[in-house]
Length: 358
Image (cartoon, rainbow, N blue to C red; front, side):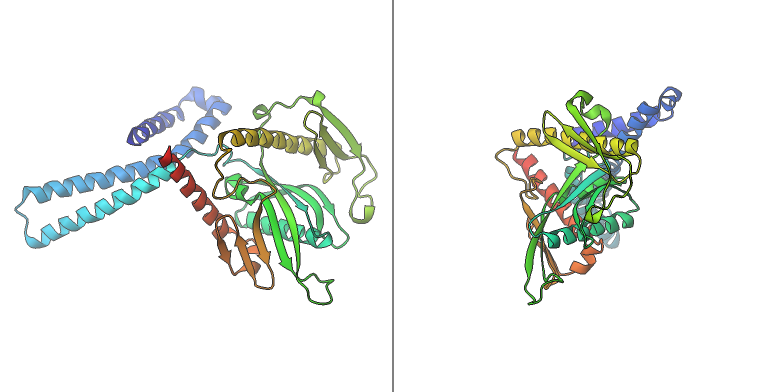
């Protein structure tokens, strides 16, 4: 581990020198990559330097104690320094192990989220709207930007489906655990006998990918244009600005109708298509590597029921990690930090356990 840390620190120093090299500064792509790597290494190097400082404190205090000739009060002070330094060394060592875990290359990317009503008809569509609002409010708290890419609204204000992009530093790293089936238990407004209904909504979370990360042959795409429409079939505009892309080799379909410009809708649809193809490749790789190992926080497959929102009890339960919180209203108002932090911690613990096994 410490060979890795020493190498990481040296690489960090090399990157800092490159950042002031005029040739690098004038090459924007290279400069961007160096800044990105520098940002990734920064917390590791800072923690490693903290570790070395604690080791030095312990060593110097031990030398003083071994030399002898200290009065009682000073000796007790030195012994306390040694005890504190040892505790710091142990704590920092564990933190370094986590920092050195393999990093998801998509963590810093923007994210595309697709929400679809599942079982439950209109009630599921209404809860799709609740989830969209929840993620929107969470994004606003993080000062991330939200762009709706496609929406199929129902008469009562819910969504049969809605897809949107969240632009922000680390958006994917926080929201990637939201992929799966979300179950809601509540009494619908139309229910006259007060019976609790159970509905489901599926959430798909995709990292936005660059053009160079996935090969998309335009000849493999079928492009259809049509008029954008809103709830009840009313036309939003009278031009064929909405776009439907079909990837013929895989059958993946993407629709985008939020913009009035056909060009903008096509551009957004292509972004979603690239992300879906990228996700498909990643899923195949993951299935091959971890066919016999199920992650503690789930595989992210949409068939999994990952969470239940119980309105009568004011409860949210994440079934993957056994987390139950009785603050449903706050969570649906975007207070997702505690949930996401718990999922990240569980994921890291599982990866740490796997790295120790291997």
